[in-house]
Amino acid sequence: MKLVRAARLALAIVVIVCAGPAWAVAQTPAQQPAPNAPATPPPTPAPAPPAQGGTKPPAVQAQAPAGAQAQTVPTTGIQPPAGYIIGARDVLSVIFWRDKDMSADVSVRPDGMISLPLINEVKAEGLTPDQLRDQIAQLAARYIADPTVSIVVREINSRQVFITGEVNKPGAYSLMMPTSVMQLISLAGGLREYAKTKDIVILRTESGQQTAIPFNYKDVMNRKKLTQNILLQPGDTVIVP
Image (cartoon, rainbow, N blue to C red; front, side):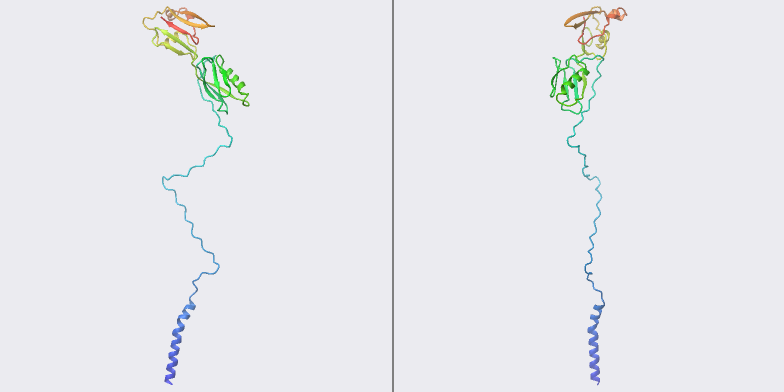
């Protein structure tokens, strides 16, 4: 009997020892993911701040619409004197509004003509800026619709008077405003010590004929015969012997 009991006890111990690990495994929840569970997306990294002093991306520049034409802005010239008539060697800007290809800076040639794109030769000498503008607009109307023309006077080289002889600064002077003989002598630095003040003469050409107009410096200085202190005209030459 004792042997039978001992055998049963040993068998029970073996069963308990073998069943223990299996029971522990049955009590542990499954570690596998649930079926059809959505995968968690990886976190999106935050954008890195721009480096100090780094190069910025180029800015987007607005593009002009196709076919748009550049607009020409008239430049500022000089204010011509009252009654100004265009002459040889004057420099002008002929500006066509919204048509820069027709615009040009021109110098009046000795024959009085200027050259312009498309229009070619135009007579400018002897005209006022307004008269030249109207003439060019009329000629340009053959090629472009409703031309708008401006004439800007850049240099006046045709309105000059000359003084020579016994003055400190002889030469050519621009006649940009009414100028008398006494004023021209002053611009020329005054008379030299041995100038013959009673024998000064103004040479003037009118209608192809040259005349000599006498001028007595001492009389005018003494406020006598002031009518001889005439206003000079372009092309006059004052001779101080």
